[in-house]
Image (cartoon, rainbow, N blue to C red; front, side):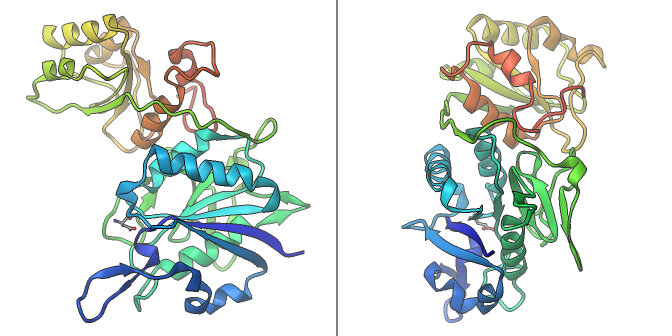
Length: 338
Ligand code: ASP
């Protein structure tokens, strides 16, 4: 039986070609993708293409587009066996993380991919990324989807979406998930590590709630920490601190953090290191976080912490505290016993 995949094309380098006269990259008509990659006709799945009316650079993607994609997937959930989103690489991990929180209990694959070079380029990485993603998006065993979560496929690796991050603007191997094992790898065979896959516990649900009053703040030596008080709209701050959770051990820092907490601002602490994470109490310079009831983002990526905060902050669906909700894994984005 031929599996059906819905391919949502949003934009990014993957859908561009070089204008050899001017040298600049311009989007091509994505509905002609079957002509450009005739191999797509040889796949054992049936692909329907649903392009954005106006393809966007992924730096223009945000909550409005995430909601749109999540809703398309939800509305078409029964009609397709898998979903593939072609996306610019710059913010793909944000979209993947946001979708993982908005589309709960997926029983089918939602794969995101893109490329570093356009499809029309002779040395392009787009073809492999696209074709193998289609394989993963249509991979079934005993009538069950093998992947039942949001994942990013890039350069032979399938990663959990909300654990992924773009770490290179240069290499084809541009994505990593430093704090979670690779869930699938494509070589001569298409492999999946079944021990590390996410599994739903209920029926698929859409919750497209996103609160944009989330601020991300990376500290640095010598910064004016008090300037944090000037942003009055922030209701949750993701504070990206040093190493395993340290910050300046001085009075100003304490006063600023206390003042923010008095205002009711939620503070989530994550690490500037891409691998490992935050352990409150490991150093004296993290004790302040325990005193002000900050939340440890443990081993989460910045992309995941930001979109999770957007999704949970004052979400009317829940009656638990933000802190309690944030500390729990929704779909494998955090190691609870880190
Ligand atoms: N600027 C592009 C984007 O993210 C880069 C890419 O697709 O690789 O849309």
